[in-house]
Amino acid sequence: MRCPYCGRNSERSTYCTNCGRDLRIPPSQQPVAGQQPPQGYPTSAPRQQPPYQQPRPVPPASGYPTHAAPPPPQAHRTRQPEAPPPPRPPAPAPPAPEAPAPFPPHTLEHLHALEAGALAYTILDTTTDNERKKTTRITYPKSVAWQQVATLLKAFKETQEEPYETIVIQGYLPSDPGLYSFTNGQLVFDRNVRLGGQTLNRYQIETGNGFEVDSVRIVLSEE
Image (cartoon, one colour):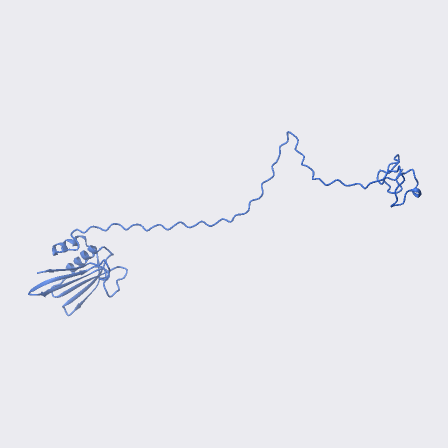
């Protein structure tokens, strides 16, 4: 039979397995709530739920492969741009050619010996001043001091004329041929210069633009 109180009981039970009532006593004779049941009657205690326990993982059966958990995803890293390679040092300049004679020259013989190392030049223009002064402007590649002297001397010998008392050869770099002052050396030849009681020819030669720290100034005379 079913319990008339909770409705959950088997037919063969004497006491309700859920609420503990005696099914042999009619409901009208059951003790009122709050009263102690007669001695000999079992009291029902509230059922306590067991604490929740997390189920344990079941180990795999032998003979089956186990699969390891995938590793956690790695944080995305931003790739840093590579630094540019350091600039290459400039190639060392080739060594300057040696002068064919002592430099700076101390004699006219040394001066004329330098002409063997003269460079090719191009005449830009020539101006005269009442047949007393002649100025010739030439251009040729940048070179060391002794090569400037040699090239100016070669241009002087190839362009000199007797009537002029002063002959000026001005050298210019190919990159700036339009300047008013020389940039690649200058040679000034004065004829019949009086020095004391003598009459001499004088060479005055400067390298570069005449104001550089490494400029060379040469003054030589001949009878």
